[in-house]
Length: 369
Image (cartoon, rainbow, N blue to C red; front, side):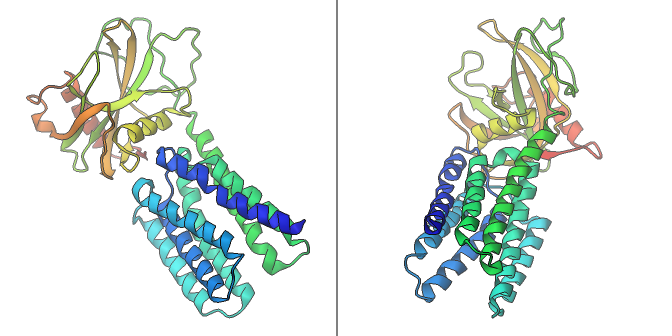
């Protein structure tokens, strides 16, 4: 029975990479790069150690886990989050120091404790990232490994500190990521509720408000579509990102800001903005936005429907831009050239000036998406 529990634990842990890889490729999940670098190093050590000691059948689990770890790290380089920030550098240095200690340790329990600490450093980075960006992780992946950890504990049978420590740690580590997802979403939600349309909003391109509402509004009838636009300035705040639309009834062949409609599955306004950013210019692109304020416009479409267009100010940080099939090209247009740049939506210069002003204000609160 214990052998079956152990086998099922390994298969469950290995299968967790399937939904995670799927979500990464769909740009729904963004793994923390430094975390998976640390875990890839640990997986390599584990595999090489077992191979050198003559392991054969047990190499299946270690090999599959290592393959999943390497695959995730490779995908994280392209689709993940994290760079050489201070916290990432500190974590990598601590992990490197721990690995040096592990190499010179000949006591089994000490070596195991050092392995857990190094692994926990990587886990801490992901927990931190997940709390800040709760929509970048996949519940199912971490839940599967949680259950695998419990099954691994149950498969041991008798209490043995050396054997029981690591699977217990695996359960706690993965459960902490689940808690970070839950708390991150819950705490982000109250300040990102939908903005109601005022009763006198009747003409196109009328500014409605400059503040995002901080209370939930219940509406008996849906009066409009809520379509967020990202006014993304370059790192030096001298240019703005515009993309040329294609195949649209209203603005085909016209340059506009990127962005799109909120969806019922979006957990918050910030989550909706991040999803649109990921879909339209790539999950690898990192921008800082002002989440608490927007410049809103009411637009009447050619088909007679109305849309509220909240414009969100943001500044580009890093990442390669890959536009989707809604656009034919993109350009970084200098703010000084917007007056003569064509074809563009008429209010682009005004919105870009507003974004530049807001982003230059002292102590402005920024959130990375």
